[in-house]
Each structure stands twice: as structure tokens, then as C-alpha cells.
Image (cartoon, helix red, strand yellow):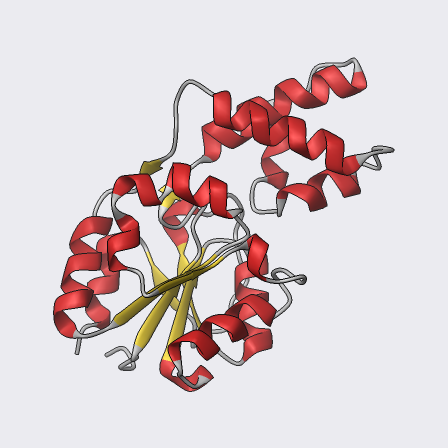
Length: 210
């Protein structure tokens, strides 16, 4: 039986929304333009869980912020937008009925959040959303999760953070918050302690309801 939590915090990309194609295919195009050589899906996939600017910095471009801005524009113009993973609206509604508070902690910007998430009606279930614009430090730093805790008025032990990527687990661990692995959206395996909750699909989260 799962521990009872007062609130659940969510990552977005790879957790609530499926943005893999809309992020990676434009990245392949931008990197080809920037480097003059084609990039394969296998080459860009490891970057899927990374914050966007960190990707560009790791590739040592002279102006990583400019290349990142081009990637963001390409993502926004991509013909197939973000979609919710199956089952989420049921989870949001059931959690709300059960009195489990919900919030978002993500490295998305507020404009990306409006396009990819709020447009699907997710925002109606969230008490708050801590996004890239809200903190100077980002996951795996604990600052975004700590800000969410402050906004909710809750202690770390009262909250579960759901995410798909290593940086999500590290951020939760650094903030002293329990972590639940969104296995359905993961692009790489995670070596996790036995006490970490593993969820195979969004509807699996319903077992958190007491």
C-alpha cells in the first residue's frame, strides 16, 4: 500500500505530456543546420530528458542561447503538438475528488506551458505551476520543488514528485521529497532504490488514493 500524500507534484515532458517527437525532430533539424551534418534519432534521444539550454551548452555552441531559441521556435512550429498520455484526466479528476492537491514543477517556460499543457485543460486541476521563469536554478537543483512546497504550504514528507528523468529523481532527492517514476515516458532506464514507487502508466497513480 502506498503512503498517503497531501499533494502530488508533476513534471511535464515525458510525464504528463508526450512531447518526444515534437522536441526531438526539430532538434535534429536545428543541429543539422548548425553543424552542417545530419543527426540521427539515436544521437539526439539521450538529450530528451535534459533542460533545453543545457543541451546546447553541452554541445559547446558559441552562442547556446541563440541556438536554443531557434530550437524553441522550431518546436512551436512543429506540425504535431503535445498530447496528454492516456489516463491523465481521470487521474486529475479522481485526485481532486479525493482531496489530493496537485501542482506542476517543470523546466518549461510559461509560454511553453500555455501552449503544451494549459491548452489541454490541465491547468484547471493545478494549484500552482513552478516553471523555468520562476527560479534561477533548475532541476536537479531542489529550488523549483522547494518553491512549490512554499506555495502549497507543505513539508517535503507530505509530497510526492512524479517524473520520468534522472534530473527529476535527483531534484526530488535533493529537496527531501519522495519520488515516483513515470516509467511510461522514460527514454532511458533509471537505477532507483527499492523504496521508490514505479508507475507503469498514469492510471497506476490511482493507487495513491487512500
